[in-house]
Amino acid sequence: MTKFNLEYLKERRLKCRMSQQYVADHLGVSQTSVNFWESGKSKMTSKRWHDLMDLYSNEFILTEDED
Image 1 (tube, rainbow, N blue to C red):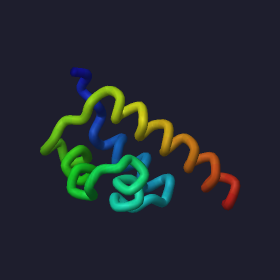
Image 2: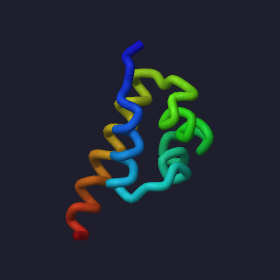
Image 3: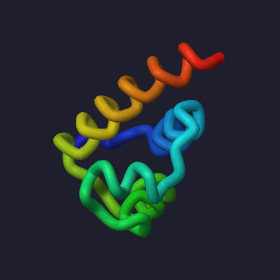
């Protein structure tokens, strides 16, 4: 499995102004899962990484327009 940059996960989520619960709801997982991914307590699959990046990319575009 690919080693993901854990700091990037949290940084990207915060730039998009998302809570862990918001991310969890959109991915169909628990908030605890998102917390564990960001802290390195749990590993995610490559597919989940791509799902996160898709979510963050779409939200980042929307939040940039608001500024």
